[in-house]
Image 1 (cartoon, rainbow, N blue to C red):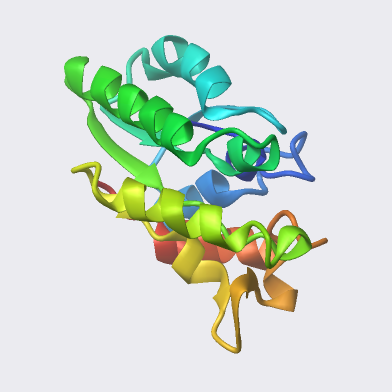
Image 2 (image 1 turned 120 degrees about the horizontal axis):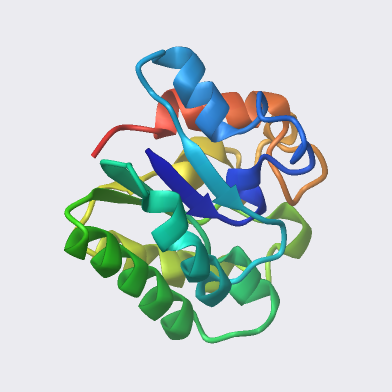
Length: 174
């Protein structure tokens, strides 16, 4: 499996520890899973796309994740969606099964980022491939648009418990 994305796929702030993050949690929950991960903190969807060909070598499944950095950098949601769609199409053209993760709530930018996140997530839902419900999995039911305090480390990224939830609950093979 190939997983490409930003800091959420990299497991930030523990990027240097491959045992923390949603791919590690998914593999721990299902030992048949093996991931090639190409992900870096701060990358936009157009930058993430550059890793697809290398990451997909030998893979049967491609997981695409990204979009929050496009929003953080003030880029149009439609551009982020177009980049995600292009990665999905490239994966499908390679004969891969493809899924896309939706965008997490962002506590430190709430409420300003909530509308663009929800708009991008609505576009992601219409892309015709399975969607990993990262947003819904970590959204605090008592504080919509934000992650629950114990599922985030600092309001931007999941905590270790948050990453486990993503890998065990939100990750499903397409």
